Length: 219
Ligand code: HEC
Image (cartoon, rainbow, N blue to C red; front, top):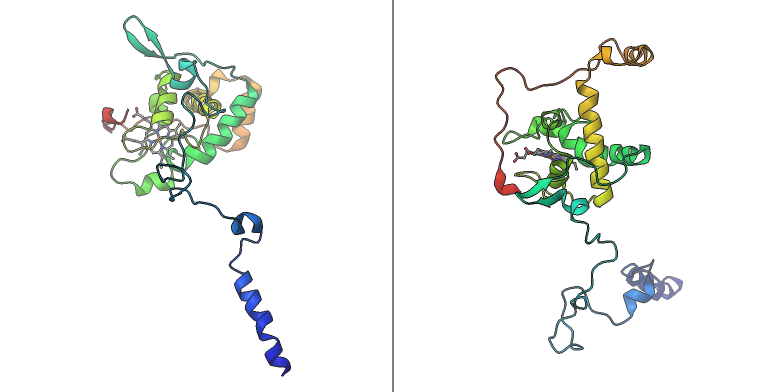
């Protein structure tokens, strides 16, 4: 008899597992799902358009240089050759963090295109970013914002400030890998040498190696 009396209890526990334990109220109350139907609105759809003319609070507006990397000139749009925000240590640190998380997987931690992912990509591997040292910061910003050829846009992962921070850090990486050791102060040289036997290596395209053709449709 005792064993039987436990059955209803066990049933309640089993059913209980289906509930959203962290948010039981929202799981129980009447609601509609995203993209679901709703009898409440005349058009029968649950999801609503935002009121006309409204923008998300976080969207940066009316600063096209900052958000597109370009400015208008009489001869057409040009890429910004300077940074539209202050490049200071916090920005560089943010750039390094975001680069390491978002870009290094493909372009390598020093941006030279040497990564495990790149070695597996036969079709069009991520290039060394050191080849783009002469490109305007606005251009790199646009590549991150809109994607390029096979590379996806990273606008959803990185907000405007984070994208510029990454551009600044890419610039620092380019300089770091292309500066001859004797341009550093003796102190800095000693610090670099103490890291390893070899001085920093620059990775220009090998002799005879062609630069991957650009896919303009991606822009
Ligand atoms: C999933 C891999 C991947 C990630 C992550 C990635 N890229 Fe790329 N990137 C590529 C590939 C592949 C190409 C070559 C695309 C092509 O030519 O079709 C490329 C090309 C580029 C180019 C050259 C564009 C040109 O004009 O040829 C730049 C600059 C660049 N990436 C910067 C970045 C930055 C900065 C990030 C981080 C925000 C990033 N990439 C993240 C794969 C990646």
